[in-house]
Length: 111
Length: 362
Image (tube, rainbow over all chains, first blue to last red; front, side):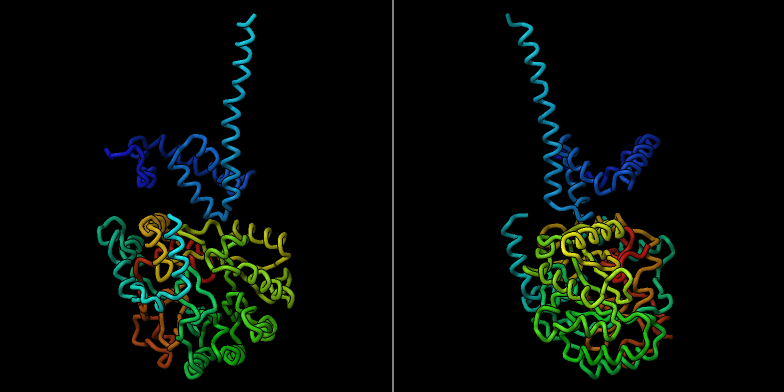
C-alpha cells in the first residue's frame, strides 16, 4: 500500500478494475464511453458538466482527467471556472436549502 | 507549475535552443532521452515493438504523394513548442543552387503535392523566385506553410497574400487557439492580433472564402502537455469563434499532435510533464493510424538538400535509410524501396486519430 491514499499514477490503472469483475467492469466502461459521445449535448458540454461534478464529488482523479479533457477540447479556463462555480453553487444551495428545514423545526418547537 | 519556472521557460524561449547552447540542441541527446527512461526500463514498449505486434514493422513507404521542402530554419517567431527550433537567430537557409536541384525533382516527381515549410519560408531571400519557378511545374497542390505574422512583420511582406494568389498557392497557417491568451502564450506576445489581421488580409483577396478555390487551412496544435481532441469538433469551434469575433473564414482545420522533440521536449522536461506525455501518447496508440502515417507518402528535404522520412526526422538528423540520401542523387524508385526510420517520437503521429502535416490520418 502506498504512503498516500491517492496516487496520480493510479488514474492510468482505472481500467484494471475490470480484471476482478469483468462483466460489471466492461458494462461500466461501455456505458461511460457512450455517455460522453456526441449526442443531444455536445461532447464539449458534457466535458464541462463532468468537470463541475468532479469538483462537487471532490474526486482528484476526475479533476485531473477533465481538466486535461477540457484543454484537449479547446475549452477555456474561464469556461472551466464557471463550470466549477455552477457545481459549487448547487452544492452550497443544497446545504442552504436545508435551512428551511431548520426554520420549520425551530418554529414547530417554539411557542 | 511554479510561476518562476514558467517565467524561466518563457524568457529562455526567446532564443533557439541552439543559440542558448541548450543540451537538447544536440540531436544525440534527444535520441538518448527518447530511447532511454520509460522505454529502457520496459515500462513502455519501444515503437518498433509496438508496430511489430500488428505486423507493421519494418514500416515501408506507399506511393510518394507529398514532397515537403524545408527552405530554412530562420523565423520571425520563437514558438515554445517549435520542433524545428526555429527563430531569428537560425542562419540555416536553402541556397538557390539547392533550390535548382529541388526544381529538377519537382518537375519530374510523381508526387501530387509540394509543401514548402521552414522556419518562415518567406524569409528565404530566394523564396519568391522559388515559388514562381516551382508553380510552373504543374503540381496539383502547392502548399506554403505560413506563420501569418510574417505578412505584417515588414513592409516587404505586406503583398504576400496577392503573391500567393497569383501563383495559386495553398496557404496553411498555424493558429493555436481562437482566443488571444492561449495563442500568445504559445507563440509570443502580440502574435494573436497579428495573426487575426493577416487572416483578414488573406480573406480580402479571396483566401478561405466558402466557395473560393484559394485554399486557406489552419493548423491547430495544443498549447501544452496534452493531445489534440477531435479535429472536426475543433474545426467547428474555431469556425464559429473566428467568424463571430473577427469575420474570418477558412476552409479546414488540421489538428497536429506536438511531438516530443526539440523545444517541445525541452518544455515537457522542464515542466515535469515528459513521462505523463509519453504515457498519454502510448496509451492513445492506434494501429490504424500507422497505416496512413505521413512518412509513408512523404519525402522531406532539408535546407541543405538531405532527405528524410519526415520533417521530425529531419530535426533529429535521422536521414533516410536508402542509398539515396541527398537531393542531388534523387531517385524516387530507389527511395520508395527504403525502410522508414522510426523511434519513440513516432508515437506522436499514431496517437488517437493520428497526426500529420495534413491533420488526422485515421
